[in-house]
Length: 277
Image (cartoon, rainbow, N blue to C red; front, side):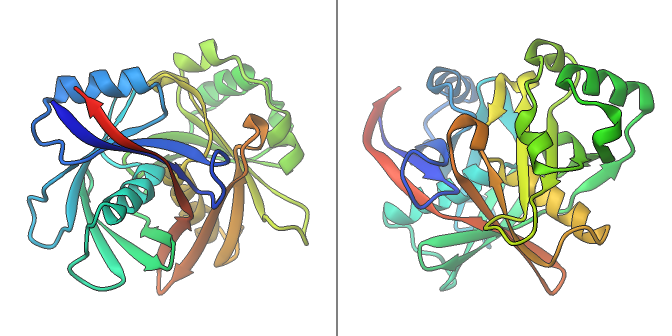
């Protein structure tokens, strides 16, 4: 069977500098096994499949797969799927606002020209057990004195997340991905010096789902923003950089508005065509 296909670069306005996403349109004829097999074949951090919504409020439904399994929610597939859906003629029921249906429920998306932003879903938080943290720090090659805070963050994807002392510490990390594979998906964030374009540097290590390092991670950035804003450690509006060590220049635009954290960025279509599945 032939399906329309788009490959989108997300969290960037410049092609090849963000996080790529494969999008299969009108994918209702595909089984879950076929979706998983295609996601494994693309070998991208995520592949999404657009489907008719099952809830009246939604504009479309999406299923999101990594090479290793399905996710109930992920950030860059949310923005990239919305971009691809609109590019193929999708028209939201409400002007300026798209509602995506996915595993975590309904996710509102604001439209502002070519840039879109999703409303961060609720994020559960849990403390990190000391022994667990020690194993992760050893796998990262990170000294304990550099860690300011550690927290489990979960808004669908679950991340053991570390706030460390400085952006240079984040960029210097060279993890043992084989060790991390048996431990956790790990997010690391730190502030940049004041006065620059970006206020934070983020990295995301996801060996347990088959991706050693994700170029730009919307779901993780959403949970980080909620966490750090609640702790008084981040302003109500900022820009985070991610992907620097991978020669990407992802930019995640974060803003808290009336209690809701909106996570946005640009999207660029790089490939359009058909895929045989």
